[in-house]
Structures are given as structure tokens and as C-alpha cells.
Image 1 (tube, rainbow, N blue to C red):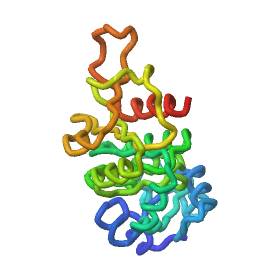
Image 2: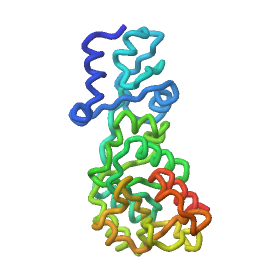
Image 3: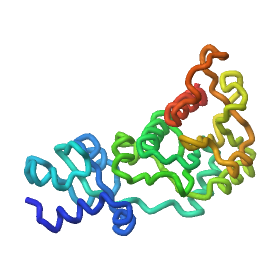
Image 4: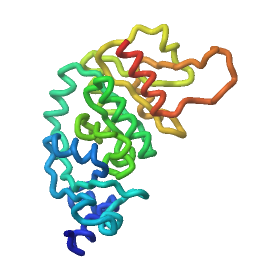
Length: 239
């Protein structure tokens, strides 16, 4: 059984304001709920259709088609400044997302980061929220394995540069990524869906990259979706 108060509480987590106030988010689907339970995250409650019925699950679900399982999970505390400093000092390979606004793109990028062993994802403060239900679903469980750190991106880029690590960025006027020698450490900046990398971040980039079309002089699509571009870029860094 599930009470009316619990239904109201779970439904309220569809609101970003309520997620931020409570520090809770919703995970839906048997696979994601199982991952949440294994993750070490604090799971506040788990609901199964077999226990509460289809009507009640439909009322608490934040998806258009309710799944058989739903969990309410507590967000982990954001990393401290000293933890971020220690991460950068370890000479990692990280992504930086500049104003990525689409929840599906963010979730897919977190999943890509997980696949390619990217150490962390830094995100500008105007990047879409990680715990948006659409973002969580698109991560396919990677939300529990990869850190997404909202921060002052230009300052983080400066920190990487101060440790003599490259700051890469993807631009239409960049150097052919297939011809470049790519470092196993540093920061890879990916820009927004509509405007690319903003001017403030562009000034921090030390190596401008370009993913050329095939054939190289073709007049096809104007650009790649940011999640697809991230996948291609990460694959080449891990080649």
C-alpha cells in the first residue's frame, strides 16, 4: 500500500524546486532501481507495481508510461573544493559541458562518460539539472557511477591549465581531430546545442579541435548533436 501523502510527496519531485528543497530525486524502471540499490546512494523508498497496484504507480510515475518499479533516492553531497582540487591534481581526463540544455543530451553524455572511463563531468551552472527525470532515465544508470560537478567552468579550465594539462574544445574552425595527438589527461569542453562553446570558455581552450564530415568537402549537415560529438571525441581520446 501507499498513502495519499506518499503519492503527493513522490509526485512533487517532478518539480526542480522540490528536488532541490528535499535533496531527493526519482528513479524509474527495474534496471535503474536495481542499480540505485547497489550504488551506495541512500534509497529513501522503493515502490513496485505488484505491491501498490497499477493505478497508484501511474499516479506517482513521472514518465508517460509508468514502469514496474520506482525509487526515491537522496542526492549525494556535492564535492568540496578540496576534493575537486585533489581530482584535478590526479591528472584526470574530464569533460566540461558549457550550457548544455537538453536533458536527454546530458543524460546520454553522462552515459558516454561512463562507457569511456571519463573521470568526471564538469558542468556550467546553466547546464540542465542532472536529476531531471528525463536526464536520469537517459543516463541508464551512469548517474550512480559518474560525478557531474556544477561549477564555474572558466575557473576549472584555468586550474587544468595551471597543472600543465591541455584544455580541448570542439570548434568548426579547429584542427582536424583525426590528425591530432590527443593527451590521456586534460579537459574536453563541449558546447551548447545552439551556440557551441561560449566566448568565456573559448578563451580558456588551449587546443581547438574539429570533427570533419566525410567526405571532408561535403555540404551535408551543419553540425553534430552534442551527445554524438561527445561520443566521437571520447572514442578518439581513448583510441
